[in-house]
Image (cartoon, rainbow, N blue to C red; front, top):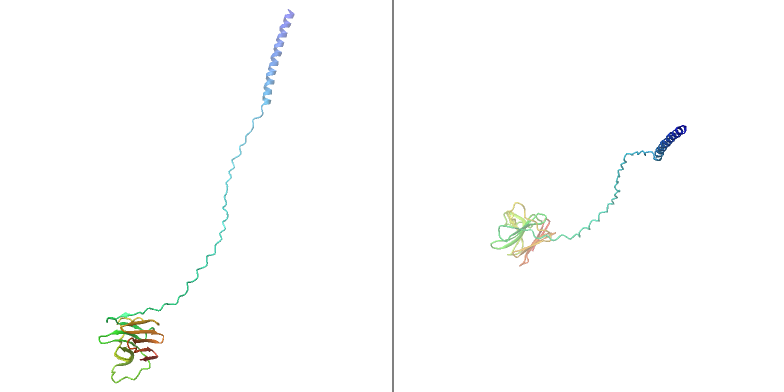
Length: 211
């Protein structure tokens, strides 16, 4: 009876021990599992950093090139001899012009009975007035195809085209040849000559000659 009780008691104690050991193992296992797991890492998110790249343009160095030298001036050519500047009068074939200084009015004029060339203006010396001249004397010289040149006796201006202004000047060195007469402008005055006879004149303010 006692042995039975002992045996039963022993079995109960063993069960309790075994049970306790199992619990211990379970706790030990739990404890080991907790120890083996590392602590949860703590993640700290840093705010994003924005980097703005600034592009600095390279310095541009501009070197101004010296402008090319100007071209040399064109060679100066001597002025050409002016062409005769003439005005036609109402009478066909007549040429009217003035001296370069504007002091003499001249012309080559074909008339019904003759052709003449002459210039009017103040000149000196002047020969004495002939008795046949009752109007203005010595205010010009003319040459006709009838003979030598002579001073004029006239009541007004004969060698003019009748325009509002005086006729254009005959430049120094220029010549008008028409109707068998040639008139030339020179530094020493205006000269007109009958090409056929060689008679003519030269007239200027302070000198003159007839031939």
